[in-house]
Length: 290
Image (cartoon, rainbow, N blue to C red):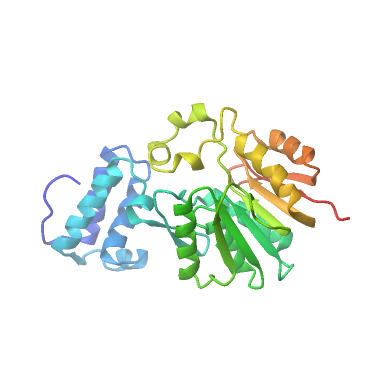
């Protein structure tokens, strides 16, 4: 936001000023981001903005809004600026080692709940847990369930454990720094994962908000995008209970190859689910009852 912060600014004018600044920087969501920044710093709701656009903004708040606006103008995502982001019903704290939760991943959680939501005291694993948003969202919807989240980054598991404490789930959620299910004792009723699936050569073409700010290890799926699936699917298949489900997030055009890997691991009932935009987003499979 160019120019010095001045007193006498009201929230309505300030939102317009921040929006204009972000528009100049090519931010597609300039209006929404401006409102979120002003709401965040001023402690306002959307209703507050609509009801009282003439509310005055203090000098300290103006300075903080200017700092946040400058960061967003440089294509740093709001989730990184705020240090947290909303996923389904909860807000999850983030750090440099955790992927920003995205709306499309909610389909993974919704699919998993459709498959096992009525099992009650089931056991869940979330592979590549990051902030813990998938596992903790599942546990919140299944009060009798317990789960473990794994991540190759120890810092990520520390952050996920902190999020579990904030949600009062420390007794039901455990986290381990390991590769997929290495050293984790099964079996599980449900294994879920949003693994890295972007081809290494495509990362440079991602939006700066993702390419420059999400952890590389959470994006890079290897030369063909399937490296993580080739590693985790056999491990998951071996640690599912009979009748248990494996639910994976996938990228557009990846379901057929992932289905082949699921089939090769001895899993059945293979299906794909599309997100609201019609893109392939979730692949699921089951270990047969014996």
